[in-house]
Image (cartoon, rainbow, N blue to C red; front, side, top):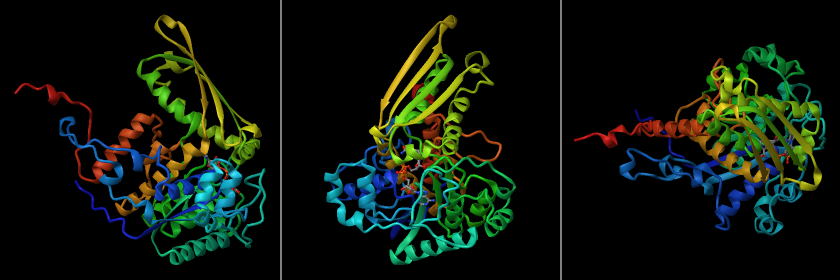
Length: 437
Ligand SMILES: NC(=O)c1ccc[n+]([C@@H]2O[C@H](COP(=O)([O-])OP(=O)(O)OC[C@H]3O[C@@H](n4cnc5c(N)ncnc54)[C@H](O)[C@@H]3O)[C@@H](O)[C@H]2O)c1
């Protein structure tokens, strides 16, 4: 059945809490692509294509030509940060992109100034800034964010908005009673409940304003029953969490291959060094704990030790993140994977990935923003599990294990797009190619 999708007419505002390395690398990239001085490499929506129908039909449109997505020309950017730096200054400080490139985009970047943030050092210990809202209650802060959102919408003449969390990782917070129902959560906002962090306030404000919300960090933000309830009530798509980049991207590429060939794994040790502000925040044990939990989940789900105890029940999975300023955003990671094969004979795999964190994350911000906007125009709301492809720790329905295998995630993403457009889903069975007349 073909769903009706509203056209992507007018401007799309992409709002980001956190104008740091990832957000400014994303914004600069889109501006550079618009000027024709760079290519959107790594972006599924801009560079990816999708097969339709049988292999013999030769129909393989680009994603952006297949589904009605906002045009890059129609995007406007906005955000909040605890520092007053405009996007040009923030991008220069982040040190990800060449000053030569940033200078070609200077006027547009300079015009993007962060709105005052909702922030509390209790939730991000290693940071402090001055560009912060003050209010008596967390509900007042949410109302101020909603005012910011409406002012941005009007001032920039936006037909639609989406919000993508690109701010620092908050401390680890577990779901409590205050997160269980919308009524409890709203009461918690009015009473300044300590388990309601700024990320949750932004998510609430976005959903309440009719704005799809995606969480790029691993902290609790829209992934609890109260906000799922609100997203259904408001018919707003939500999703998270933690952009799938770097070491976890590699893990979810390699682990499905080992599993597919029934090779056993005893141990997976991952360590990395990074020296950007994200690394500094993660140097705090409470923020690291949030990240660790997000990164640890993937292997268990991919290997399914309960189905393959002989191969995976003794897997020792260890993750270290080390703050090391000299490297800045250019992270280096090492993985040692202890595997075993036929008759139990042991082997090892070593991966040394010299990656650039924000270069891997920026296209995900673009894809998530465009696909969340598509979801809303297609009448989809609540948790968007079909966007798991972009997340380290995908949000899924209660009681449903998330899907971590990158290739299954891709199949789900592609089949959802085919479904939206009324195309046949592809099972890869292909027996019909060999049937006799
Ligand atoms: N780069 C990657 O590959 C990657 C991958 C997955 C997740 N992430 C997550 O994305 C987020 C951004 O990463 P980054 O490298 O850009 O970090 P960054 O430190 O460069 O930028 C984060 C920005 O958020 C601001 N901030 C913090 N709390 C805020 C709040 N409450 N409201 C508004 N602004 C706030 C900070 O001042 C900072 O400018 C982090 O949470 C990180 O863990 C990044």
